Picture 1 (cartoon, helix red, strand yellow):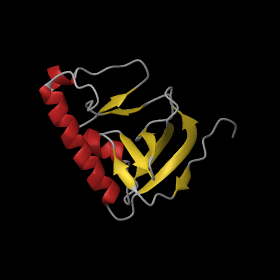
Picture 2 (cartoon, rainbow, N blue to C red):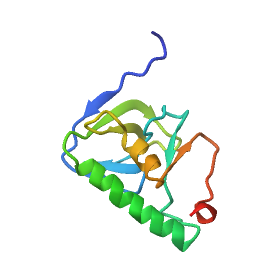
Picture 3 (spheres, rainbow, N blue to C red):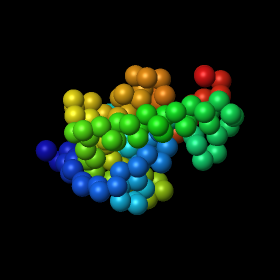
Length: 127
């Protein structure tokens, strides 16, 4: 079927959470889209680079720790969509052993929200 993405599993010797929704695979930064589709939907976690308030920074740090725990869990794999975001980062999906995505788990735990292009989330007001 035309237009259907074929996700490819990529091998990472070093898999590190950069923040709550970005990872590094062998030193290459990647954006996790979670349960979404590249450049259409995904998830967003609190910002660690330019947090708007101390609470956003705290929750962003906690989201990063949770994502790292998920990355370290047995059976977790990274799937590459072959697409890139507006910054040139590969758009990937972190899949857990039970078939869910890391993004779904972060959303369930309320450390992330569903996201679509152009949307922002006021973490300081929500926390």
